Image (tube, rainbow over all chains, first blue to last red; front, side, top):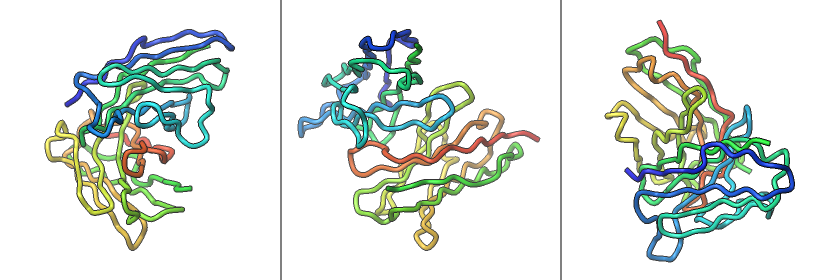
Length: 111
Length: 119
């Protein structure tokens, strides 16, 4: 199975400042069509996870443009350009290159 | 907008079979390109993918579950289900159903249901 490694595991942030989360995969997630099979999810306290980014850089419907995904191959980044109080929670990356999906350990964003 | 709702027993005895259903509203389990997943989360921990079933009926499972898991679709009731056999206390977790279309991520999630394995 592909191993997903996130860093940092805990991220204290200040509202209005940017925040960046890294995700590395144990093998390349780049498909032959040029897309990366990497999603980002946010689990707010007491809620189910919600999709933020798919195919490495495509924002899901309704996701503010403060959120952006970048990277290719084995190294990916989720950037929040200006953190808001509502952004707190645990962020997970997940690969869907292989049918056996695997998640990163999660990064807890705290204000 | 697809909505998902898990249902099933909150308490299961060790060695028995855990059975959960996920009711789908606002969409069809037969929509071309769709897949229907089960994910679990141990208390205070991260997410573990259990498996999914495509609109075509093809299934994929987490190999770590060693053949204990079965996911099925029930088109007549617009539901899909999870069966996990021979459960132990290690299977105590919040179970989520989720769905997506092709490579666009899992855009729909249920609210999750806590299943405790205890005698």
